[in-house]
Amino acid sequence: GAVVSQHPSWVICKSGTSVKIECRSLDFQATTMFWYRQFPKQSLMLMATSNEGSKATYEQGVEKDKFLINHASLTLSTLTVTSAHPEDSSFYICSARDWGLPLNEQFFGPGTRLTVL
Amino acid sequence: AQTVTQSQPEMSVQEAETVTLSCTYDTSESDYYLFWYKQPPSRQMILVIRQEAYKQQNATENRFSVNFQKAAKSFSLKISDSQLGDAAMYFCAYRSAESGGGADGLTFGKGTHLIIQP
Image (tube, rainbow over all chains, first blue to last red; front, side, top):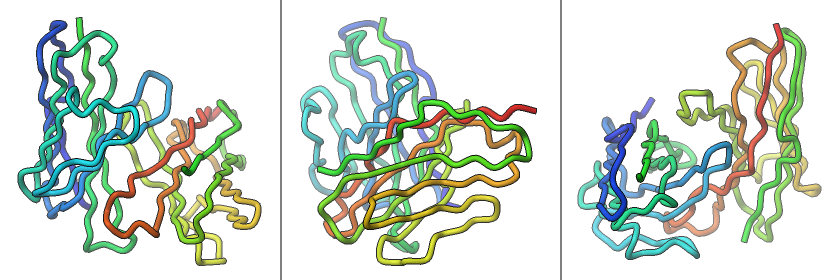
């Protein structure tokens, strides 16, 4: 099956710094990628939809200037958490859609745990 | 907006027994997809089973089957012959099939923690 990777898997940063998380589709081209956020023992919440070569579409309540998304190629989308604060600590998961598969199935990355001190 | 409700925060079943996880959803759309995902402690999301709303036949994948009741907006997951490896969080998810433009991420329920007792 299709493989999606995320880097880093775990990052600790100081409050006020910016952190970049990468999401890569390793064996297929993903024109669409999604970013989710998961708080401990909670569900996944869709943050934004990333389309290659265009601006991301953010869900209501998600700050565009805080969570910068760039989808510069068919295999890479990045999420940058700018001026991170402790409340941004969470588990961030990306998924990539393979339009070549039935139902345009999404494949999930392994997630990135962000801890802001 | 669509909502997905999982009313069972936790379920426990004896190994080799059968367990059913409940999921209801609310939508005004007629065309959509429903999914069950498994999230083990590694937190990697794993697709368990999918259902296309326009198909009346319930989906089945080996020991996993669903009971899809479109009129009732219900989508339960039955796990037969439960195994220790089935222990995980299970999330029910909805995806629109009508947007077409790719802006159709998944809407998840809050999850059910499934415990398998040996």
